[in-house]
Image (cartoon, rainbow, N blue to C red; front, side, top):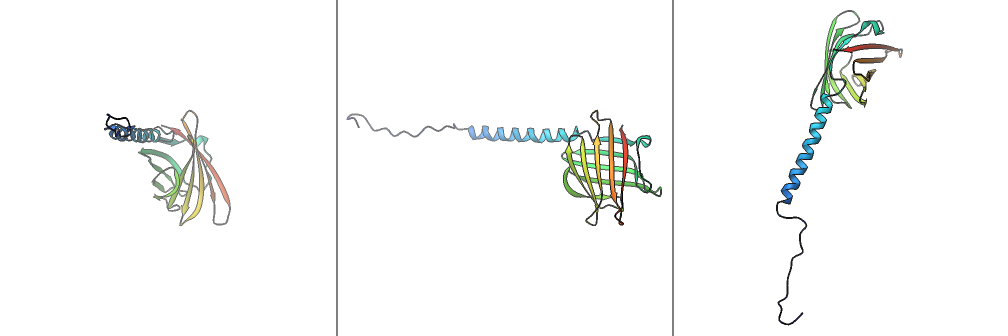
Length: 176
């Protein structure tokens, strides 16, 4: 200490000024909102979203299997609703609804007496894998592939009967 000068007591300089915490919160909020907006836009812009009509001439649906003539995918945030209209093997009209996410988890199906749950899993931007269950038991596996141009949807369904016999069908749909 030098005589004649008062000792200095300085506080270490803070890296942040008053109000910086408010700016940080605003930035975190803005970035979070951007991620949510992008997720919503991606779900809405999915190649699966829209109305699909069965092209019977290009399809090979096995006798005894349901024929879905119209399939509609709609998005609301990260949730998707899939509605089908068609006929059962004996010609009875069938209307089903599934609402869930592409997360591989089971969500309930209404309107189909052979299935009570479905799990949709996004494989890539143009492919879905669907597992259908009745009372916890897998009854069929479905692969949905949308063409690169987004105009055609091919659905391959593999079903295993109670006897262990496997059947497969392919339904081709055109985007409306």
